[in-house]
Image 1 (tube, rainbow, N blue to C red):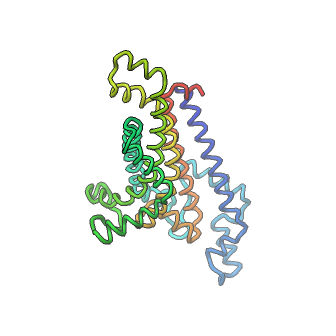
Image 2: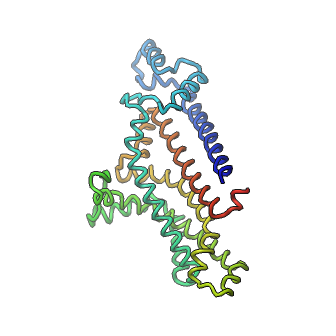
Image 3: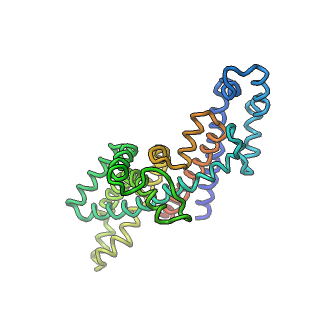
Length: 313
């Protein structure tokens, strides 16, 4: 298991370095005059040259990349070109908002996906058809459409939940839950739909295997067979789909944070991209990649624990 874990950590570190280098190269080699863009068309050539020197843009791209990596490994991702706030501080200040959304969506999705998948596979009737209908609905309707419908009906018309804003958990847990209910609900629909359908298919496949019939012939109860044996064998495919859903979830979080005016990483990314704050954009990309790698690492470890064959492969 340690070798398996070590390989996953090493591959994640390599992926992080490669994506960071590619992102830096794409952002800073656009061919445009970044200093001119920042200062405006009325800036003189001398002012543009001085600004480029101040930001280090006058040096070769490879030297800029090495310098950025040298500071990034110590946690220094530079400063915002517009607010002079350290990039790490700007991201960490908004990270709790995004992590709150992601944590709630993932937790609720796991519980609902397993429950619906298990019921759909064992109760081949109304629940099964409803789960398949939910899967089609989740795949067909984008998350931002669900978000707009929810904020219009439950926030603006019914006034049950706040339409915008975020309350920190430490300040008021009840208000925190209310401020996140609609954003989380908008994202859960699509995530649960795909995962529940995959778990349903996996459970049906496992129930047809010979060892399940053997367990039944030995007198084991149906509940014990499902929870202790079938669910463990059927979980890895569903967990893999859930890991893929997490990547899409981060993209959906960007839209949802815009709809509900939540000051998270997605909101920061859109704001920084719009005004050309490249250090912040690069920092957001790196932190997003780190979150994706950590979640996939956790899923890989869980799958390896559930299925020893995955560790060998």
